[in-house]
Length: 331
Length: 151
Image (tube, rainbow over the protein chains, first blue to last red):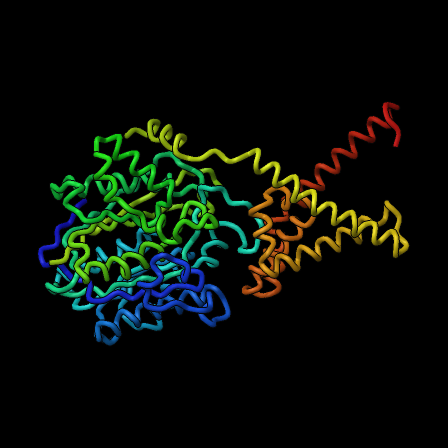
């Protein structure tokens, strides 16, 4: 389903906060703040997770010169059970709040809802975004952090980062959201939780394809098509699918993946980065700043999410995935 | 693209696990851990009043203690990533499974957190270890009774 925004809501400001390990990220120079402590001086990882979300939102508001009382809606989510980190952050921020879960695609699904509320005239300012905290996610979806299990080359590393965007009415000088595609849930029968890129690639393919089709656009009409966290193998698979459908090799170079580039070529991170915080951090820092600087005029951001739980894969279910996209333009 | 076609593409793109390399690494890491275990065992036999039969218990306790220190320092997961089964199969791997769960669940308190989750990973090792020990003992008992082997 493709939505075309008549009023083109703008990204007024981005707020990105990351953990200490993310200093090594190729994108770290674009982040607003990097914490020296992965728990943000709190007692538990989950409390640190909450504080990270709060800080990122506060930075976005501060940059735009908006107080939390002026913000109409807070839309966001994370990967932890019942999304307590985001719920608790919403308690501190005291903004009307709806929690959203699209796994790692929440970074975009939240912005789509915020843009719709803005277009409707219901919102002057909305904060939207997503986050993940490595230790909290690892323990819930996999093993205790210090357990010495060998991860295969297909595994990805969950990022500790929060990325939020303050969405408001259209401004010609700011990156604006022109269109969006809400993805379907796609399941190609992949069932390996250590190979999520392969599970998510078909969802990204479907979303990009239907977005281009409905918008009557070709690959080369975009400066960049950036997926969220497919990782090296997922990106290869996505390109393989497009090559199969007849897209030329030189057009495929327009597709990049935030998860693949996040930690550079470091083999310690296997196939690359993942997590809701990965796409959110890159989209609302690097992309936002590149567009403001005029480097990119039209980009398609495609956040991918694997909709699994530890229970579902232990019960032998395959991994359904989704991908949501926003088309951002700059005059 | 159809599901079957995609699964073929996925098979092509996904690198095969480097079995031989993993086996060699596991052999050396496991071998080093067991050599250290043997040294600890000899230490107890030389300096204390232990025999080859009785040195097992203090040796296991000592090795688990080493695993605890390495887990707490965050080093065991690095050894595990390199050594694979080589560091998971010896008793130090069992220790790591118990201790990493204890560290992880401390935030939920000592009773419901540490107590309730201590054997979350190691529980199946204990269960299936005891069950298989029972059956091995049963088979040996039958063979001894039939006169095939002796105790």
